[in-house]
Image (cartoon, rainbow, N blue to C red):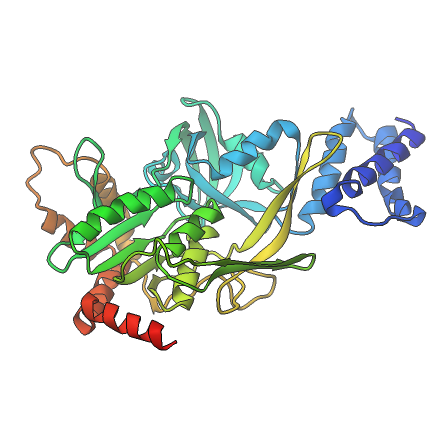
Length: 446
């Protein structure tokens, strides 16, 4: 490729970005000189590199280099890869069933979805995926990672994993159809797939595990709540542990069901106005005590739910500090190529003004629980085995009672046990009928 052609290509890149109406700005002749180094380097590669190169791939690499300099979430998405990007928030696809982030240049596991191939293979939150089928993941974008990790059911992928304890492990995982049921109870009732949502029938404490936020989350939550409220629920535990996020509107809808008024979350950026998402009284559930569980695998939309409920004093937060992924990306479709750019445009802020995102050199990020609690590492393996059992219909010859199962679960899961204790304390201190009366009085006085 001649130097003149390279110069035309560089100018075309400039025009592609700045001709888009949403991101247009005035340019001068001097602006084009910033692309001189790109032209020079491309010229050298064309003339002297040891093997043949694909100019289009080099240009895409240059674009992603510019975007990744901003943050790990901004990236260039060729039109053919846009569908792969959309799988990241899909609740139904073929692959491993894993939430991922990019940290320090490597793919990092936020959490595997319960029951997924990744979960069953023993992949843990915080694991770093060093290699995929022998290829280093250093520098991979989230969209490219999804493309490489998803695939036809029945195909295998080999992952080299660096665990949080410093040990390395090579794991072979077979892809399969992954359907993420967004809301579960604490145990599966029958072969029909119904769930038991009341974890303590005597004290009427409900339990909902939100796996991911999708289009189905709000309706699934409503169905579970209908059952719990018929049983005169006094307190509810919402488990957001290992929830990597998903669709933010679904998270906002969930919070809106639990508070009557006020800001749920706001967004703002250097080049965008402040936008407020506010609660509405219609559709809000009647008052009951609320405890939310989070951990290091709670990210993005799940952090908004926990943090917003905490700021409104609507819920007691139990567990460990969350992941710290609180940035919003917009997709800009480029006018000529049909390709797209995913660009971080805003940060999410909780009602009291806290930024959820883990910024460089920040001491505070995510959501800090009101009650710190962690699971004994010696219980993790047995707990995972028990949860797999609870996610399956009970065996006909299993004589274990529901109360015995709940007691065993609380014995192994210290975080859930602490959440139940918080519920018991709240119910004892302020029965729901009394709490409703006092809440109504406070609202009138305000």
